[in-house]
Length: 128
Image (cartoon, rainbow, N blue to C red; front, side):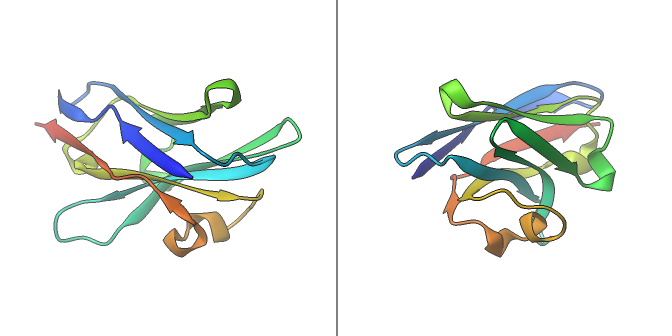
């Protein structure tokens, strides 16, 4: 499976960006896709993830992005999106998407080592 993240860029504080994560190759009947980010000098952290199984979707957001970010998926396009609104300078980071087969809850999908496939990262820079 190949993951391709795109959509990063430079935006002013308060602005919006939409990241895309397109998957190609093997497809899964159930899946979890996560967005992670890594700021300079900091550890990679979970931002959001989405799990899908038999038409049931569940989402998770880290506290710092709740109410501002929205994760969604388009199964027909094998693409997951991260809509980011009200961006803050502290959102500046390289954003990565990752995928694994299976529908997961709780702390497991928030861990980077839970994922088998990773995209190359896309840089988001929020200016103050």
